[in-house]
Image (cartoon, rainbow, N blue to C red; front, side, top):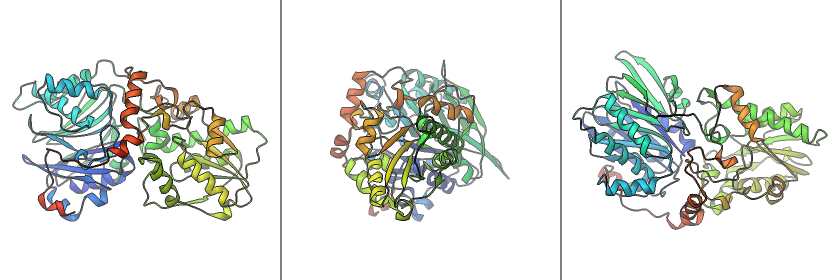
Length: 507
């Protein structure tokens, strides 16, 4: 899970990219990077940490140029080393930098083929570096000294034929412009927008529409599945569908948790879909338990607030804010290791005792993944004096690994894997548990945008839309990316790449 942004403007874009990354920070809190282009020179700053920590005033001053791309990362495939912070760079052809959101499912095969057939060296374990080199090879094979948009689109089409998995990409071709493209299933999101100034049109590409809003760009539309957009140095927009049989299967977990509620993804307001989730879950509770004894509905901030409020109104039950959030603690769901998650939950939330004491409380969360957070919060509610604690998840049980860019690679780490809903409730310590129905979740999105016919729901139903995932692949994935492996590979290592300025080394 990552956030990407690219801007072609008529003045320096460093501040615009920085501002966009700050509102995309929820998509990655591990590392950040910006690269800008001024003439034929590239200027880079990237490192581990939050956006506000990676970029100081002295770094921003060096990021000159009217074109650039940015990235915030949470590591999935690859390590959490600063060496793998994006954007990545290759000098041939033209000088290309690339930032990627998603996961390639055939990265190992591609890396081997790149070495043996394309004669390119891969220096990290990141699938983003693999994707960059595949694209660079395909663009170089066009053999053009000055590539036209059609040449770039042909290269993207060739990438689609070689690459499998989920990928939303923004790339900068030095001296020519910025390219973005989306996988043929449209699993990961990409939008673009424009704004006018005295010199003409400026263009921004980003993971979510909220990044456009803060920069004063007007949302044009989402990129379609398999579609590419190229923005030249004059701000002219060229688009083309580069995949043979594109079918939109966007990740439904974006609407459950990943995206900000004020974003529009594939024509659907995330805020609206989460409202519908709350209503439909309220309907399920009323149908299963019409004589419930719930006194109060309390959300687990922040992503569940919208659903919880609608649910409370639907149930005719009081809504209260029972937890206060420390906003300076990162998202626990994407933290590596159970110990870190447990510690962070207590740091992140504080219970308001008066809202719990002597009450039957329904806690509402966006989803239950590993169960660590829910278990801790339920115990906090009991410690605050709750008589009974019920738990509702706005999403169905997460039973299957996600291989497309959300860090849920190991089935054994998913609390609902191989368990009934009642067993999950017992494990997290809830007196009763309610899950969203999968069809209701799909309908919640369709009611906001009826054109969203199908989704990637693999974490809920085990149906991997790319069609290349089997038990053997999942076994290898779990062995390479479980929490224990991450703990062992957390160290840094050097990278042969375009580097930050020397005086950055004292940071």
